[in-house]
Length: 147
Image 1: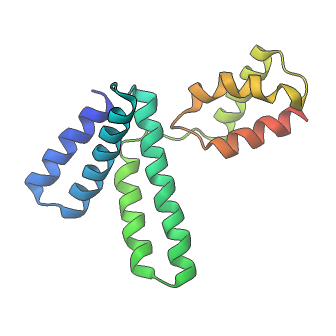
Image 2: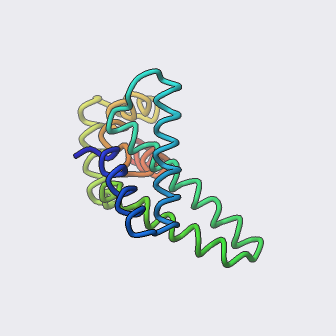
């Protein structure tokens, strides 16, 4: 069962259980997927759906940062609950060691030897880590290993 089907089933379950928070978070995720499909004029592939969910989690993390600065504890609690719901549909994130192993493999595969080759390494690496590792963390690791 792909992620979109899991989200649809989870929405049904949340509606039956009358879980309003879970229902609204899942509906927002499904709406984001549907909007992306309309924009692309085609169904999204699994990696694209995972990237979209990752984007939703990132947006909520930014909300938490802003809410902490504003002293809005209720917004922090709400955003953390939404992140917990979204994380149920994302694959387990890669550990630092797993990510480093993937980066080393991609560097070797690309034949990279200097930071100028970073683009080639990232082309190989991004599809392998999509939805499972933060792009910023991945690029920093590639840069440090190529330096």
